[in-house]
Length: 425
Image (cartoon, rainbow, N blue to C red; front, side):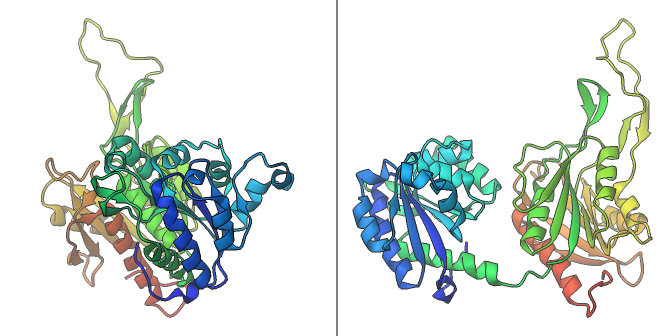
């Protein structure tokens, strides 16, 4: 997350600070003081572990607010205190975020006031991890962090350096003023106008599974990471996004409406149901063929050898959405996953499908594109002549960065026109 030195965005903000157990909890006293200096109203929830390092009295003295510790406080819970706490803040910050509370958040547990408030909140959440380096690098912790980030929870840190346990490495809680800067950056981002506000987008993502019988299917290797990242990036710029997703193991992107499908026919139907839309991004790796007549029961081995499968062509989702007509999105973007002659095949696809842009990428063995976190793409746009598209060569980036760059290019296209219904470039 970027930081900012303009703290005026903090004036009048309400923050719920969840302090969990760890030696770094003492830094929260300074954090509260610095936030108060900048006009932030801070309420605090202390876990049982946090109270071993800082007292409710010291936190209350600095915040000038009542401090909450007990889920079953009769006075507070008669007013549904955990609900009220979680809803009356502009931002919930967990600092320090111990390995334990990260695990409980990822699991959706609600066994104390802190986790109950976190589970009940409808407000954005930021975590500031602090723990031993081995705990931070443990695969379980890393999996929990990925889960939380996939749900839209922001993370600040940890930093690297000397730790109270005597070890050195990543795991230190970032310093209080860095946290203040991170919180200010969060609010600054939210105050920036959203260039795609009021626009509707439909994004397809992941593979499709075309059944052979009840236990077997034909599919592509897509993980859905790129398509999901595109949906999240468009939503971050203010678009109202419907994500039509084939079978994936990814968390739903924050702020996105998700429709889950299995087959190409279902994906097409769901995409058309999401219209009208201003933007369509077809990032899914749709199986080109399906079995013409899938078996109702599992196909068994027999003395005559493997069965003969008769294939039928699946509907072409990109070409269908690109067809001229009142339901056609203003900007239709396709993806071309190729293993050789990437630009040549992508240019041909751009001309054939009738879409406006093609994002071409190399998925050959050894590139690590399928299932990986990085991608190198080329953006092809319709030029004055169909056979000579405009080509942008992008560097290798993370799929999140590719998505952000594509979403910004889409936003720039709409912003470059004077009316509210721009024509694609």
